[in-house]
Length: 170
Image 1 (cartoon, one colour):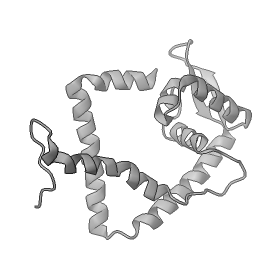
Image 2 (cartoon, rainbow, N blue to C red):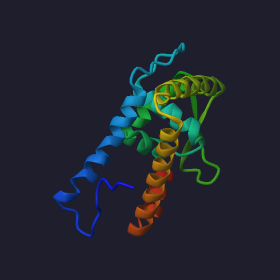
Image 3 (spheres, rainbow, N blue to C red):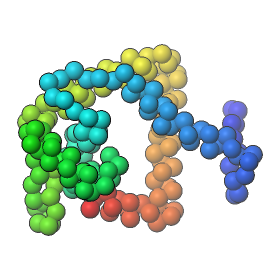
Image 4 (cartoon, one colour):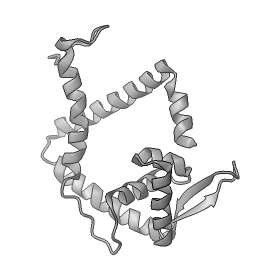
């Protein structure tokens, strides 16, 4: 098997290909999402799409959890959540575990919308990824599993996994 880079104890210019490979991840996501314009009756901005999909995949988490996931400051996220709530897509309710926190859930309308968007997203991704052979798709999935496992190890090693999990939950 050919090695594209060599990670040693000290990163140096010889390891630049490693850094370049990391920079490819956002470009990969962008390539998958290019031209994704789901058809529905609600006008949404990209941050609103991302928020709704995060709620769909992690329903019942705190507002700060979602704000971190979509990369918004709490104040900006509160504005966004209010807008989605006024559109009847989400509800903010008090947490059973901690009455000081509000959690977010989808309304029936929000669930129907996110299910529709999710189906369209899966169709788009399937179409885009169909340029890959079955072997390439398996390798891609394996690569993402390795990235996920590496992230877990990095977080555990640095002690930041628990902190990051706590930050995402709060």
